[in-house]
Length: 229
Image 1 (cartoon, one colour):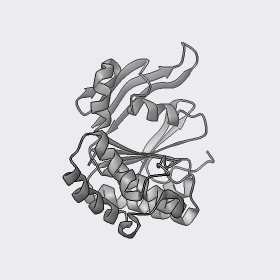
Image 2 (cartoon, one colour):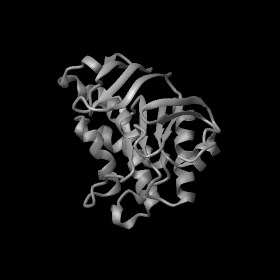
Image 3 (cartoon, one colour):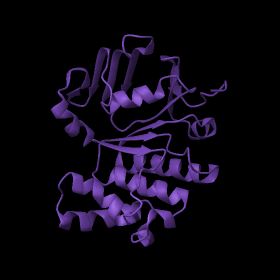
């Protein structure tokens, strides 16, 4: 479970970027976080990843209390998460297999486990035949699926996708989102998608939390984009 309780965030004591957020996300939920540029989406993501600290309030992810967590505990928190970024962040000189396996190597997993698990996740995202390809040999959609496989390979409890379709065309965007929805249903993982793409959000009719100037404007199921963001 993820719970924001009266969470606020300021930088250098200046204007609030987020103010009095109360959000509860249950295990296995699929949630969109939306809002205009500057609404606070990026800051909210950084709080979840503990790249930034809460200024006021309480933020709990499973058994981790992020507002008072020691820095030495942050890596353990992040092991429970898989993150997909807009810019893919693939290693250009590593193959698809090597890019995905790197996430396991960081945690010190054995070569035997890596060799057995990585092919399963490449198959899951439809890239079994691209194992020895390099990122430059892949389409944008294929690169994003590599990033998704890398986020999933350590079997995290939570998947955070930060503008995951921002660098690919509309059809591929739909493919990636459908894959996230299937993974949520199939694996029961909590999925949080931060996005500004109204058509995708309206299409999938999931829970949508809308931020506006750092506060929650609405929190409901589907059909959120009655106004432009």
